Length: 447
Ligand code: SF4
Image 1 (cartoon, rainbow, N blue to C red):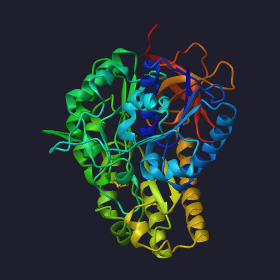
Image 2: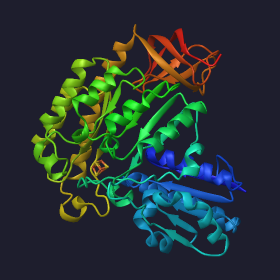
Image 3: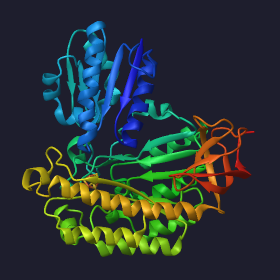
Image 4: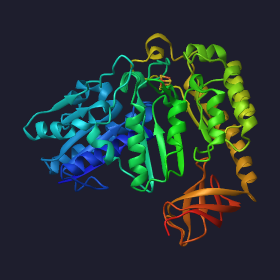
């Protein structure tokens, strides 16, 4: 039996797909890269933005065509669109056999057995949290089965979110905020490191709201960063409200914590931030960035921006550009506002900024960021950066690829390097969005 999983969206979905690979392998499936030969096609979906959601229906059309010539093919839909659409999806797409939300992925064997018995299955129940909002949502028997790929692994520390920002679909598709016990997480981290992971990414929809007994994100990050054999740890995504200078100090002090922070700011106007229910001001945000850049000049900071949130005026949008000019982000995820189902903004606010205005604002954000990015790339030339090698260059012979602590791609001219090597690279050139250089010192290797 062969299974193919198509994944849309964020790293949390990547993590969930890897988990489902492991569950399916245990059931005797071989995981394949294309769907033509598959007996089971599963779409792991994302509905944070409109575009990935639309892609799901076009992909389902292709799977439906395949089922016409291969009637035993099982088609499943997992992830946020599955949770959000549930019964509607089963009604709309008659070829789909199985629809389940993110909290049900470990029930795949039972659900597939029901499908084989002739049922169409819908499973969108939430995981239950205890009074402390804690639940070990990775079952014990799965702790030692987290996939390590390219010497990297994802570790989910929490899921869901209680913030209910007015534009965001996450509390409706991923549920309420639940954290795992710290020891349960550390056990998994030690295991993936023992099985070869050099870098791990701690994941949560609001990663730094982590809470389990006396442990907060600070204590957890501190403990993970000291696990024997771990070379790098990253985390995504934090919220500005739960980010304090103490965490900036820890990130700066610990060499294993990557010198990178993703801190979404969304909009440069306090009035718009209030309408988004972000519960912080522009000044709060800038103070945190200034503190971190002050103690750690090499830090690479990324952010999220929404252009054209309901009622955003031209003057308020100009403030967004001012914040970008001040913070000079190294990376940015910027999008035009689009209504997401169930959110407060979609129910109570008019999407009143015209599409062409949103589009023009987005272009201005991207142009300004691009200018900063080009200047930042130029400034790397002549510097030495540490690079974790993650594979051979797909087109250039004798060139290996890797990432800096700030997650910048680097082409390294040395064919003898292996995946997982950590190497100091002297940067001598830049490409459109990446760096290039020669290795000068091997820092961590197996050989
Ligand atoms: S904090 Fe993040 S995940 Fe939570 S509702 Fe707001 S945008 Fe969504």
